[in-house]
Length: 335
Ligand SMILES: Nc1nc2c(ncn2[C@@H]2O[C@H](COP(=O)(O)OP(=O)(O)OP(=O)(O)O)[C@@H](O)[C@H]2O)c(=O)[nH]1
Image (cartoon, rainbow, N blue to C red; front, side, top):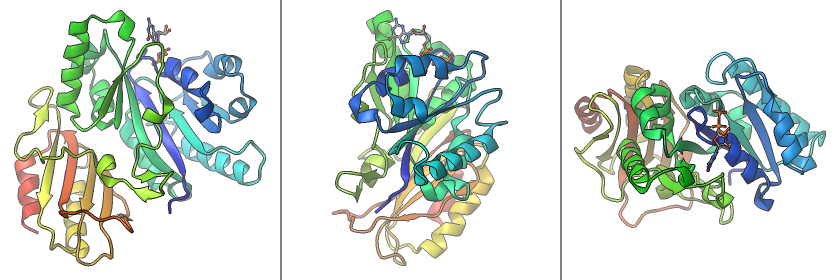
């Protein structure tokens, strides 16, 4: 069973409604045992606003503001320190117990390095686990942001949950066009439409690999691979842009053979590889494996004990910019 603290990474382009959402979420009873890390570039500390509007001492005490830099670049050490610090204070009962953590990034953040930091840092990787990447997209300006800003595309591409925000301001045509563009960019993500940050927290939390209720792995949901693998049909907003595809492999493979090939792919396409997820049925493991990579880092696989599939299928989902799909398929199929 995974006892690590689940982390929700909340990101989304500038002004797309992250703070509005967080504010509403934290007022919900299901979120009262949450710690929050907010990264802001501006001068006006949001913690004041949040501490004022969230009438909950627990959250006010468990809120950390990281200013003057961005988590994905200059503040990565600070984030690691903050997360360690929160964990140790929690263990020493110096702060109220929290059962989950939400990290709100700046609007221009690249989620890749933040995810890598969460998954790879000593101590952090052992104490926290990434539950889901939740991304807000402005229903009026979202399409324009996606077209003009690589950051917006990267954020949407790695999302597990996409929240189309400010629905009250958009026309049905705008909503449809944005929704279609997001589906093309990230077909696996769940989409919701929200107004003034209203959404049931259950749609956003515990959507990762493990279901805390049943304590069972839910790799299907986590992998978000289309039920029918997309085969040779990559999806993209622009031809040279971010795309995702699924590669299905034979089931009689061994992890010791697959691992170096995946690592080579990560090394080769590290810059372009935003996210890799896979479910592997390998002969040299006692249960299926969940694998995860961000850029050049391939993480330790998770053994999905007690989980099986009626028709075992090894599949790997890749999301990235300018990935050579044919070459990747060829390299994987040669195993
Ligand atoms: N009409 C309307 N306005 C909204 C909605 N959600 C957010 N807003 C407004 O949009 C503006 C930006 O929202 P924020 O929540 O601050 O966005 P953000 O993503 O945190 O912004 P940055 O931190 O600058 O990246 C604010 O003025 C909000 O009040 C909505 O559903 N409807």
